[in-house]
Amino acid sequence: MNFYDSERMTDLLKPHGYQLDDNEDDADLIVLNTCHIREKAVEKTYSELGRIREKINIRKVKTGKRSIVAVAGCIAQAQGKEIIKRSPWVDIIVGPQSYQNLPELIAKVDPVNKNKNINIDFPTIPKFDQLNAKIEERGPSAFLTIQEGCDKFCTFCVVPYTRGAEYSRPLMSIMDEAKKLIDIGVKEITLLGQNVNAWNSKGLDDKNWGLGRLIDELAKINELKFIRYTTSHPLDMDIELIKSHRDNKKLMPYLHLPVQSGSDKILKMMNRKHSVKEYLTIIEKVRDYNPNIAISGDFIVGFPGETEKDHMSTLSLIKKVNYSQAYSFKYSKRPGTPGSIFLDHLNEDIKNSRLHEVQELLRSQQLSFNEKTINSTMKILVLKKGKKKHQYIGRSPFNQSVYFSSKNEKLIGSFIDLNITEAFQNSLTGNIVLDF
Ligand code: SAH
Ligand code: SF4
Image 1 (spheres, rainbow, N blue to C red):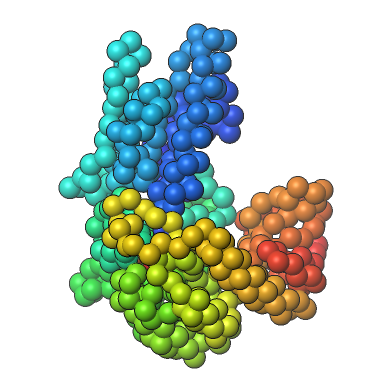
Image 2: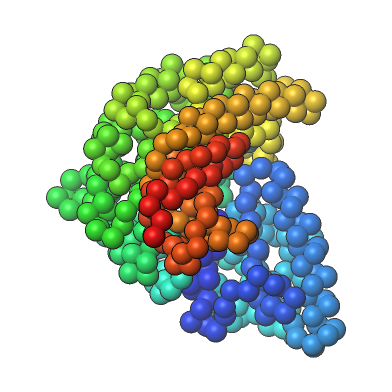
C-alpha cells in the first residue's frame, strides 16, 4: 500500500515540476514514505533520516541548495512530533490520509524560519476524491487501492490507529482509476486494501456490492487481463468472492489469507474473532471451488502468552493448509496497542527459534509448490528485463517470479506461454513455448 501511495505522490508532484529520481544526492525534495507495522521499520526510518541528513548537508555545501525533507506514511502519523524533535532537518510531516496536500505543504516550507509543516489529519473528504493528478507512468502491472483502514482492532496491530477507520472507495472512482491505468498500457491490476475483501459499495443496480461483484465488473474491461487482490481477512471471505475464483477467468488463482496463529487461545487474545476451524473451513471451501488455487498467509510467532503447545498448533495448521508461500513475523510490541500492555512477553531467543521453525516449514512448502509446476505451461505477464543478457522476469498466475530468455526486445507487457523447466525457493525458470 505504501508503494501505491508513493506512486500517487509522484503523480501528484509532477505538475509542480518534480520528477522521480533514484539518486538523492542532488534532490530538491526527499520524501520518506514510512511503515509503522513493526518496530524494525521504525528503527530503519530513523537510521534513514540520519543518512538523509548527511546527503542534504553535503549538497548544501557543494551547491548552496537546500533540500526539502518530508516524512510520510504511518510513522509520520503516529510519531510526527517525535520525528521533528529527533530529526529537526525534517520540514514536512504528512500522514497516509493527507498526502494529497503535499504540494501545498511543500509550497509553505520557509527556508529562513525553518517552520515545520505538519498534516496528520483524517480528512472528512476522502483523499481519493482529491487525488485527481494524471497517471502517466506505470509498468504492465499496477496497484489500485480500493479499501483502507480497519475497524477490527486486533490487539497486536497499529493499522486502525494509523490508517484510520475502514473505508471503501466508491465503485465509480475505482472503475475510473482502472480505466486510466488501462489507457496507459496496464494489463494486470492488484486491488489493495488492509482488509480488501471488506470492500463494499453501492453497485450499478443500487444494491450493495462486495469484492466479487467489483472484480466481475472490472473483468469486463477488455484490455485488463489479470486481476489480483490483497490482503484479505477471513471474516470477510464471502461466497460471492469464493465463486469468482471458479467463474472469473481473469481472477488469478491466488489467495493471501492471513491467520496469524494456529492456536484458538492465541487467536482469542489477538482479538481475531475467528477460530482455527473457521479458517480451515474457508480454505476448504475455496479449494472446493478452485482446486488449483495457491494459498498464502501471514503468521505472527511469539505473541505474549504463546506456549510451546500453541506454537505446535501453528505448525500443525501450516501442515494442514500447505501454503504456496507465506509471510511470518516475530511479534513486535507496538505502542498504543492493547497487546503492548500484556504481561507475559516472550524472550527473543524463544521468538527466534519459533520463527525459524515456522519459516523452515513454510520454505519447504513453497519449494514443493514451485517444484510441482515443473513441466507445466503457464501464461506469464512479462514485467521487466532481468540482469542477464536477453533475460526477462514475469509473474505466474500463482504469483511466482518466473525468469526466461528471449532475443525479442519488445516483450515487456505481453503475455507469453512458458514451459516451466526449473523451480527454486523463490522463483521458476522456463522456456517460451513458441518463440518467434
Ligand atoms: N488485515 C490483514 C493484515 C494487515 S497487517 C489481516 O488482518 O489479516 C499485515 C501483517 O503484518 C499482519 O497480517 C501481521 O501478520 C503482521 N503484523 C501486524 N502487526 C504486527 C505486530 N505487532 N508484530 C508482528 N507482525 C505484525
Ligand atoms: Fe490489523 Fe488486519 Fe487486525 Fe485490522 S484486521 S487490526 S489490519 S491485523
